[in-house]
Length: 124
Image: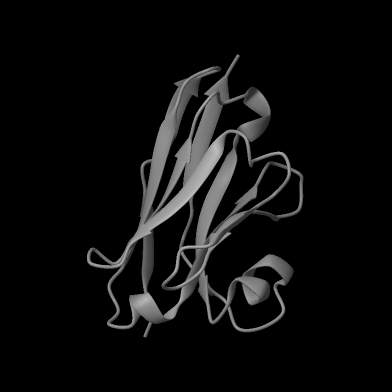
C-alpha cells in the first residue's frame, strides 16, 4: 500500500527557494519510481520530474531541469523536490506520485499513486 503525504509548500518571493518533501507510509517505497507533477490554476496537470527506484536516475520537464532537483532517501521513505530561482509561473499545487517505473510516471501510462498535493505560491 502506497500512502503519500507532501509537505514543504508555501509562499515565497520570486527568486526564492523551497524544498518539497513526500513521505510514503507504506513498506515498499524503494520498489517504486517517484515523481512530481504540478497543476496551476486553469491549467492541466503537468509532469515536473521523476526518479528511478534504486539507481536514482532522474528525468525532468524541460523548463524544470535547470532549477529543480529531485532526489530520494529510501531509508526515510521520502522523495524531495528542491526548487531554486522560483518564478511566479511556478505557482501551482505540486503532487507527489509513485509508480512502477519512471516511464509510467512520465507518460501517465499505468497505475499511479498520488499524494494530496501541496500549494506553492511564488509572489512577484
